Length: 424
Image 1 (tube, rainbow, N blue to C red):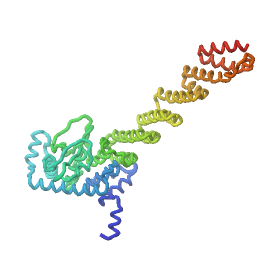
Image 2 (cartoon, rainbow, N blue to C red):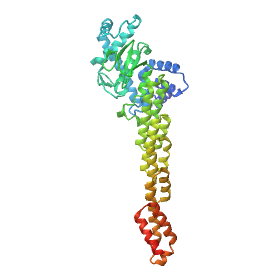
Image 3 (cartoon, rainbow, N blue to C red):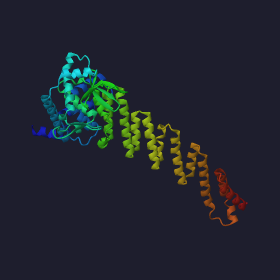
Image 4 (cartoon, rainbow, N blue to C red):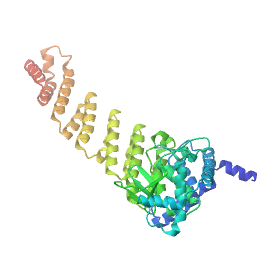
């Protein structure tokens, strides 16, 4: 390799040449792409190297800071060791197609498998046997990332959740056959491989047939959307890079998927995660901005209410009131105005406070403002010592009388009555 090539490689953010291909294609996607052409391209990318594709997505769109360039290179070398372990397992163990099919037929799982599909199925059965064996050194654990699965099986446990182990199994299958022959079955909280009407549960290395509420079967290409929208992994701190990048990945998942139902709920969850992050870091305006970008009325109101309440705590009523157009709850709207009125009342800005209390229709607080104005006006006669001086303040006394009447305070009314008598 020439010096220039070495320098270019060192400065490149990519750990594998295929990462650049993936990155450029994803950057080119817009909402105007036809789903059929997108699905075909995703199929081709998965076929070429699903593992590199998955790792790059975790680094680029989920923000896992540990997945730097050197680490990704090491993980891909570990992947080669996993493939070698799989090949060694097959060399030492004979997986009988006939007995496997007979066992599944006995359980009513795989009836009438076409002859042309038996070789593909044997490959999948071999992968399942490998994953179920000690040779894989694989352990299932919820909410893990792909990097924890790509370890040296001779030295470390391979730890992964259903998304990750399905991706590994699909990758091994793609080294010999068209990955598009596989599908995935999803139901809330889980994903598994699906082939010819039977489910391949990669986490246990067993075949079964799930009958779960909300389950759906999708093309294997939907696995990329599922992985991008997997927002359960709190431990990895997805926002180490940027919540904006994380949301970019969620939007990408929507662009890649042909099925609204597979992305709608998780996309909402992705937006909510970004919104919560902004609220937690006190970036309230950003929280509302992302909520509005989601187009979800519930999230918009949630962010607006939470932001308004936090701005009230900061006595920033201008920003708090900017949330009002997005809030339906009349009690919260009233609370925002009332909080500002009370703030102004405490600062003895009674006129502005009165305007607010009139607007929200709170006569009791209006009366308190009038009493406050009465007490402030009374200070104008605090230096009066004689009856003659008091008579000179008759306009002030009249103002006090009006304020006392409006306040409804009996002590104020009694006091001004006595003062008026003295000035008469």
